[in-house]
Length: 246
Image (cartoon, rainbow, N blue to C red):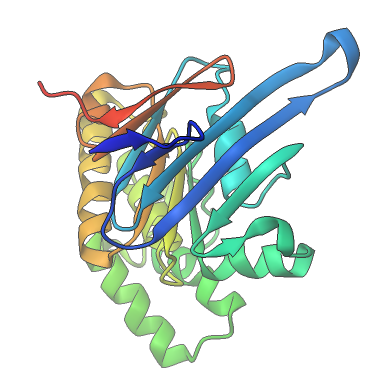
């Protein structure tokens, strides 16, 4: 159930404390008459362990919101709390640590390193964290099996289909056991059938890994797989509620 508090904040109920709390978020680009108001007072709260879909037309503010929640950008006004931490209290090193250890990112363009194998790509975050080699190998093998690519560990991105590359990207995003997954149009470069399979995988990953996912998508079929849907229009949150039935 979704409710609205006395302050106008959309609250998506959960039994645990919220994974993400956004209050009064504003972000503009440019100044004066030419300024673009990407977000205008957006507020919402989501619980842990759910897949939240973010929908809206191009230019509605979806990517801006994801970048702010992920600590890749700073709001002009408002507060963002992720996994109990107010992002405004973190310096650049603290934000870097947050992005490295507690947030996993999945992008439309996959972002894999062409010269590395699937296993090596998945292992990159663990190398950056200087994880024990044996721990790294075990985690990489587990994640590739989780996304159905256990037999493709030695293949490079160019030898994989688009759907397989996105599966590798999902495995890589999970490498450091993040609390939050942020995905910006993760199926945008895939055909409808492959995109649906990837979205179903994301939902399964949320369940099996116990993470929260915030996923931007414009595909109505994919929205049906989410636990909740948030809709942005011209920088405003215009809809926040349970996923519509079929």
